[in-house]
Image (tube, rainbow, N blue to C red; front, side, top):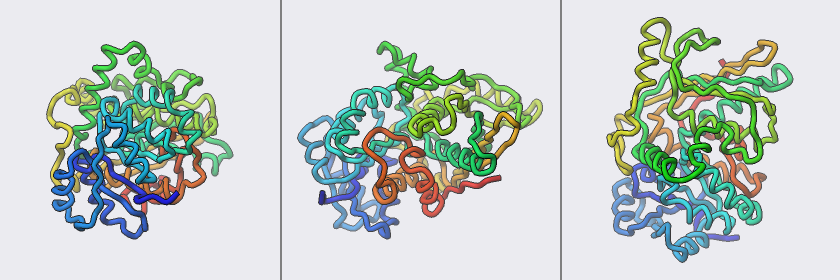
Length: 386
């Protein structure tokens, strides 16, 4: 079906949405048509001019809670990039519209309870319409989801089958989490306090695998000495979403990594007493609940470009054979790298993942190695077998 746009960036006037639009300006070589979307035409025009986009860049006014507005959006585009969170507050109607209309969708969601509710409510409609909806296409959870995929592919190639156990270990990370991430965290905590069942979904490593419960998983709640690396590791705040997405990838890939697959994520803090002290300090950190950044705010260009991250994935089988894969990003995780990752996910879904059918997916299960290739070629990520 011929439509006006391939991609509409919904929330282009927000901090991350603006970065996504800026990035798409550099990707004219894709041949895809795209537009900036948001609630206010005046703000869209101002942002378009501020980022140096041509005056001919299409602008689409979108009211997320208005059925007629969303119906109009569905008629105009093949895919929506949503940078409007917290998604549990502002994303319900858009998900419904995409699922029912056959329009593809990618977002930056790190809200597992809401994601499960959307899957339960709209999976059948998405399968019927052909809409491919991919949550968590930013720092949570693309580098982790794809890092595990690469490690498991390497294990299978070398040893004939995937690893039963994979450890994700954040070796380095410089940068801030987005104001939207903090707002989503607060909205999730508020939902857990008032809505029955939300807290159970948040605690369950298999909350995104309807009908399947795998083996007991490490909680990752306390500092410890990692038995493989021999250094102290601390809780990693994004593990509560990344681990769920990784298990969903395995689930959607028909448990190619095994029904007994075990996965956890921790932050490496170092050896000895210093490593222990840093691990304990991280475990006691409560900064995510503080109002340091509001949605729509973020670090300067220099700060974003000074950021980076480095994650190690250690895959081990029952025979003690092992593979290590490193995933690195050249920008701060919450903004600079995330904006490039979600844009490339949208491009990949439209251009490479044409065989992916309708339904709710993860980056690894929907796009797999094609997305790894795009992130390496364009988005400043490297995936390396070490």
